[in-house]
Structures are given as C-alpha cells and as structure tokens.
Image (tube, rainbow, N blue to C red; front, side, top):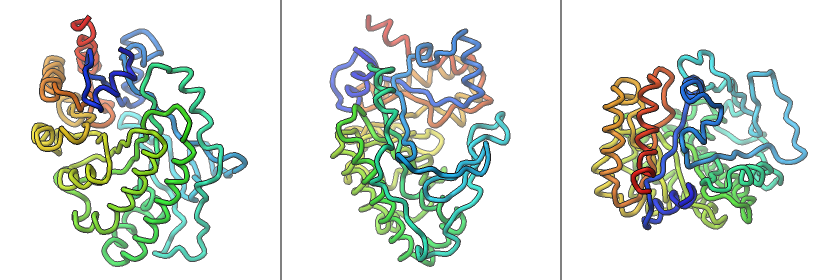
Length: 343
C-alpha cells in the first residue's frame, strides 16, 4: 500500500498493512535526525505518511514586511516567525494586532475570494504523489486573538460576546472562501488549527463554545467536505468535553490527542468508532523524559489500543528539542517495523 492509501484506510477503517504514522519535528530535532540517518531527506528516512501545503498571499496582493524575521499577514497582524531561542522550540509570537478595541468599525476585512492562494499544491503533489497531502487552514479562535491580542480577546469573551460572534462569523466566511479554491486540486485533507484546551479543561466553558463557535465550525467543516477533503482539526489540550460536538458537526480527524491531557483509552472506547485520532505519543512525557524502550513500548501500546483502525500514530505535538535522538529513533523504527512484519 502507498502511504496515502494507509491514511485513507485508517480514516475509513478499512483493511491495511500498517497503521500510518506522522512526525512533527522542531528544527533542532530535525538536525539530530539528519545527522543520525546521514541524510537531508527526513521524509524518506522516517517514512512519514503526511505532507503539508499552506496558502500563500493571493495573486497581486503585496504586503510590505517590517523586517526579515517579522511577518505582516493579510489581516494586518505582525508575527515574529523566528524563534528567539531555538533550544526551546520554533514557535514565534504575536507582536502587534489591528483591532485595539472590540469593534470592526473602520477595519477592512480581507477578501477570502481573492485567487491564487494555493499555487504550490500541484507542485507538492507532483513531488509527493504517494503521500497524504494536507492543506493547512486557519481556525477561528487563534485567528481572532491574532487580530485582537490574546488577553484582550479573552476579555471580550467575557464582556463583549456580540463582537466575538460578529468576528467569528466574518472569519468563518473568509475561511470558506479560501477553502472553496481547493476544489479540483489534489488535496486529501484540510487541517484547521486552533488550540482550545488547557491541560485539564477547555479554555472557555463548553456552553460558551457551543453558543459562539459550534455553528461557525460546522460551516467551515462543510466547506472542506464540499472541496472533497477529509476534515481535520488540531487543538492542543483537553477537548474531551466537546468531542461529541465536533463529531456532530462533521470533524473526521482530531489531532494531537495528548496523553498528558486526555485519557487515550477512554477516548478510543467512547469515540473511536466515530472519529479518527491522530497523535497520542507523549511529547511532554515519554519522548523527552523516557528511555528508548519506554518509547518503543508506548508506540506498541498505541497500536494495540487502536488495532481496529481510526488512528494515525504521531507525537502529541512537535517533538521537543530536548528529546534524546535515541528516543525519537526508537519511535520511528518501531513504526517502520510494521511494514517489515506485514511483508
């Protein structure tokens, strides 16, 4: 089977020769693995089943950039994209945002229907014909606080919910228009990115999430299905309380299933027939702090828990920079052993 076929088999719960796997890696971990495997081609070395493609600015839209390490996006927010300390990770930070008050008055919302956003899809598919190709898409929560500032936006959730609702609807409309442009392109899935969870609970009460966001997510998920793509979502933290809602509105794959935040066995037992879980390996625990044998055992445990399908083996978030390379290699080689055994 090809890697693409294995991922579809996992999502559709059909017969397969192996559970597919995927690895998010920080740049420091990539460097360790390149040295270990003596190659720059980590897709080949790791056997990773997934390839991502992201949107670019629409044709003809030129956005003046403040500096080499700062990116101003179509919404007018400015982000530092380079890590201050690569020993910690690759995550940037929000530097400035256009909505200084809870109002859209005077703000020109970007037009999601502008064409030319997915020019790299064909080239990426040509390069990786046998991989599962995922288009990365904006979610609703992170896009909103990127416009308002994180602390400000949380305050608006408490005191200005009419504004939050209006902004969410605008973002959903924008997302749908961007997604519509993927119709006819050879993309397998669309993954919306939002981090909704603390380690032990949602960042907002479940009833607030349902009131302000649920129908907007239903709308963007529907647009993804209309584009012929598998509907996928990334959200760190504990989302257990709203998994039934996400299933109801059409989510097919949920990432990253953090074992430090969610009960993996309970999730599989209660929801495993209705949704595919992607992740599950301890990026905050076993991978950085265990032994190679601990990591091998965790991989085998996850493969056993999800032996009936509905699973993509992966770390629960990017493998942290402090992870010993021997631990990462143990995960990779244990995943690859499935193919050797089946053949």
